[in-house]
Length: 210
Image (cartoon, rainbow, N blue to C red):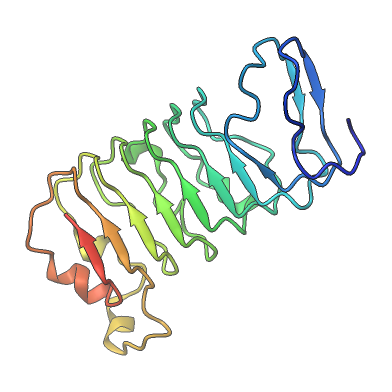
């Protein structure tokens, strides 16, 4: 099925299918479960030439590493319910448009997250719930929603995770302030009150769940 005008992955593929080639089509999304039941498949060629692809959903697989060779056009990457333990430091350099990233229910600890791994200007929503984190990772300045619930975090140090310097905060204006508005920390060992240095950095925060 290479070099056709397909806009989606064909439905009702036979369970006996062993090889599927869908390169150089017009597929823009790969929904979860689209390849379920294809237990005999040994070859899947899908991503080559997909210049319009914006969403990849690889949730509920058995991935132990981050998938490689994804199209540069991806804005939504969903990798929930896998067994991923680490993210390479430069992984997102080849994915400059990712805005929504879900890595809930994996095996990520702080040792598997390089300090600036999420330092992307494009990212808006980052979900790392139900992992093995003991510390809050560095938060990108443009990030608006961060889900860290049900990890092993004991405390939050606003100074350590703030993406801008203290000097920049003194001349605070809305345009340059970190954009974080929603932070979820329930299911950890973090207790109220909310640290003052956290609020001093993320002044646009509207909701914190502890």
